[in-house]
Structure formats: C-alpha cells, structure tokens
Image (cartoon, rainbow, N blue to C red):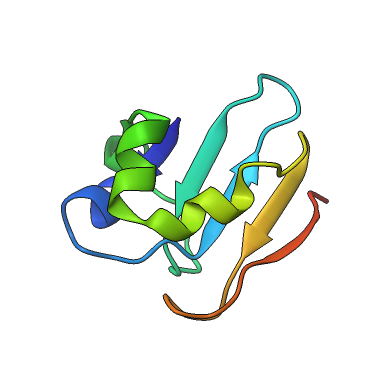
Amino acid sequence: MLTTRSIVHGGAWIAHVSHDADDGGWQFHDSSPAAPRDEDVLLVSLQSMVLSDSTLNQLAGLPLGWRAWRDGPHAPWQRGRVG
C-alpha cells in the first residue's frame, strides 16, 4: 500500500484512494493537486491506514481498477472507475 508523508506524518486527510488493477495495491493520497514526489511516497500496511481513518472500511469492496474520492474529511466517499 502506498501513501505520502503528508498523510502519515503531516496530519493531512485522505482525499483519494485507488485500488490498482495491475497489482491489486491500494494508494492513499491527500487533497493536493500535485503528484507526490518520489521521496514523499511511503510503503504502509492497509491496517495502519484503516486505523488512522476508519472511513476506509467503507471502501473494502472497491473493485480493482476503481477509485474513491471525497471533498472533505467528513464528506461521503464517491466511487468510479479509474480513467
């Protein structure tokens, strides 16, 4: 599972989640419009992400190749296919 330093160490909320079709991995991103720099990407466990944000449990059934997003930390998750 991949995320960024801003989420793990900076207190940023998770705004975007993807469930990758190619390898089944999950990605967790903040609300920044810029792509994360390589040095800011962290490898984490799914458990650690769910423990930090229990709303991720709502995305457990997100199919491969799909993504979820929300407008704020307390907003509902929306879902759709990647691309």
